[in-house]
Length: 143
Image 1 (cartoon, rainbow, N blue to C red):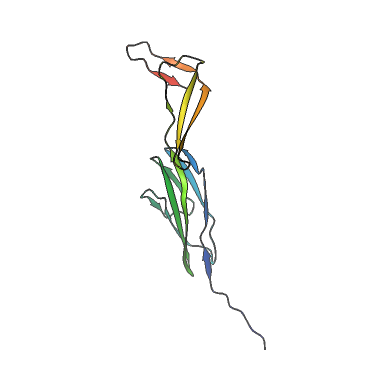
Image 2: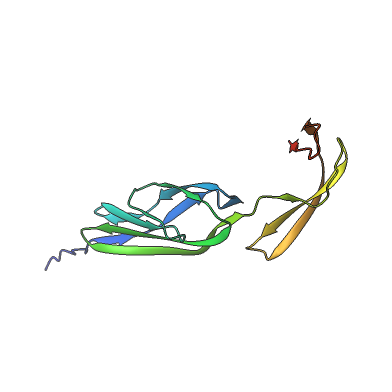
């Protein structure tokens, strides 16, 4: 007796993104890595910030600092599957200057807040003043 094995159609949602962390506004490119037989025919992304997309490989901008959970639901004739990555994207606050009155080539402290790690990181870096306006409230542009 010969048997024929019939496999049911399948789908497995998966994705990647680049970059996973950075200063907001953070532009992230998402890549669909879903597989299925037949291949997925529709996608629904939830970026964790009340925004969604139906594109296969969307670009998304995170406009606020936060730790974001991202979900992708991929669908084909077999049905749908959802992949969720918790705390996958981290948009961090811009660095801020702790000291005022910095002169050219002086060391200063820059602090970054990491929501994922729950700590502040301080670094001493050389800076260069590239523009100083001579008025009662001088403005400096840091490079």
